[in-house]
Image 1 (cartoon, rainbow, N blue to C red):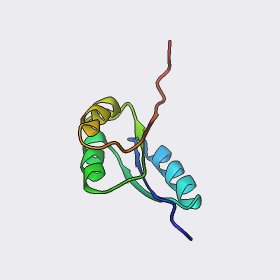
Image 2 (image 1 turned 90 degrees about the vertical axis):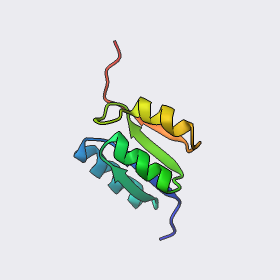
Image 3 (image 1 turned 180 degrees about the vertical axis):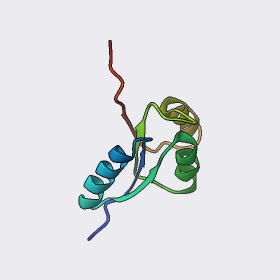
Image 4 (image 1 turned 135 degrees about the horizontal axis):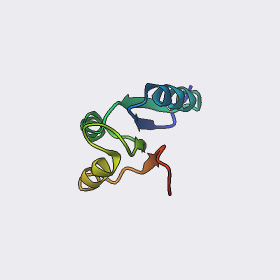
Length: 87
């Protein structure tokens, strides 16, 4: 299988991580995951990712804080993932 690129998935819900890892791996992407913002931040700075899929509501460092800090150092594309309801 030819790798398309490496994606970092960040979510504190293990089921969501598992589903996304499975789907993206089947599509030919290299996938790494983190369970909180701090872990993800260290991982994202230590490697080059083509994309980061980032939950907004997480322990230790939420997705918005992660994005603000990460943007000061890198321009990797980020897709936000959220189960927040809008009212």
